Length: 91
Image (cartoon, rainbow, N blue to C red; front, side):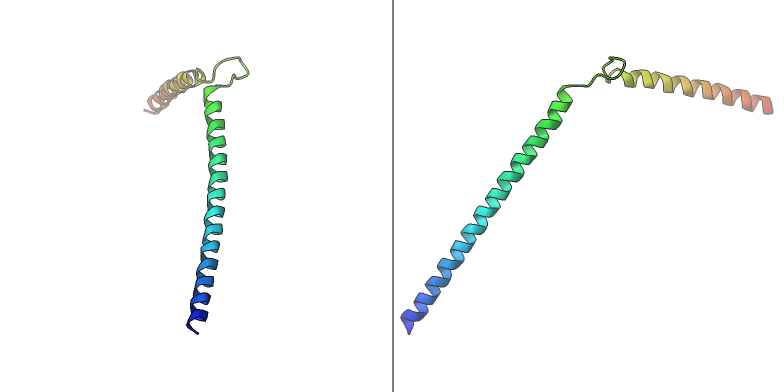
């Protein structure tokens, strides 16, 4: 009877260890695939950053915000002037 119990326990342990091994192997493969996809995505993002695009006017878009900042400053100045005229005309 004792050898039957020992044999059953040994079989159960071997089965459980095989299942754990399959699970660990599956998790390692999943992690490897995820890492490969993540690395590819990072490389694509870095490649996009390294190659700045050219807009319709053949200008580097890095220069465009300066132009936009100047336009915004001009708009603020002209709107303040207009507000000043509006308030002055009401007094």
